[in-house]
Image (cartoon, rainbow, N blue to C red; front, side, top):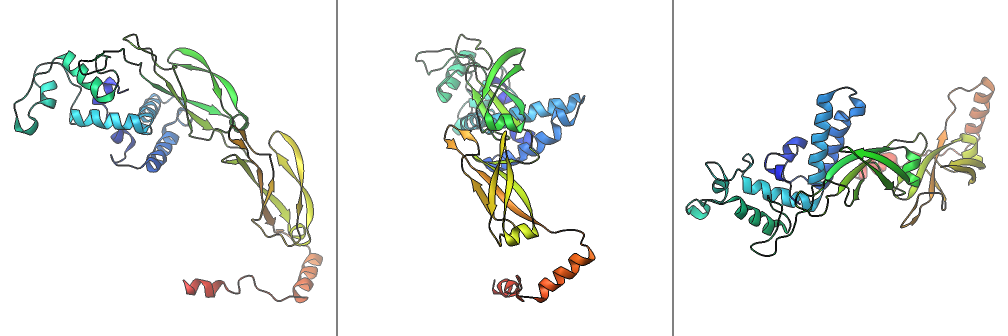
Length: 320
């Protein structure tokens, strides 16, 4: 549903993006600004908090394809001018008058309500819809909010109590939500002023990073360090799981750094299934060797084979 104050606000300018910005670039720019002006990063800074709310509102509209289409239509009608006022110079007649070189037309408030309602299939400026047809109450305005979760709650799901706009509500967070993901909570927005249904709450989730694990879809990833000897000769190692007992993994002889070992069913348990735990092997080279260790290592090198892992590197680079 189009908001009455969209005439006043240039959300593209708020986010510093072009009007044809792609969804990916819009999200990237929003995250950049959100990190810069987030209240947690600017404690006690009222200006930063106000800027953060402005950024969040702009992104909530432009990130939703339907709302963005409505917003663009409203702004195009306004021609970038301030909010319309019924009657008088600079009012509705400035927007709708003179199409095709014809005379300006004076519109009343009720006429304009019906026109907006017919365009957007919902409530117009007066909160009703229809071109002379059945007039129905408009839905209340959607509101936006943010919720910070620790990594475990994001993976396993959680139930939170939030206070938004003076209202306290219980929100169920599904398992497997990612940082920056939006959750739509129907009916949790502002009440309608015309007797229609309430708006929705658009909740943006902020997931705090974990020191060991990261989410990749339904999978959990972690880096597992192994010694040179374990990688070369093979070994059985213990790997941690999120919220459970460690599991034992077999490292095959000659395992290179970067090889991924998979543990089935130890990832995120979501509605679309359960992911896996992906352990990326990282071979750790000792920083300090004793004299005896150096001698043994030199003997190992002399014993061969005299292979170079970079033998074809230069040739491949020249070929392309």
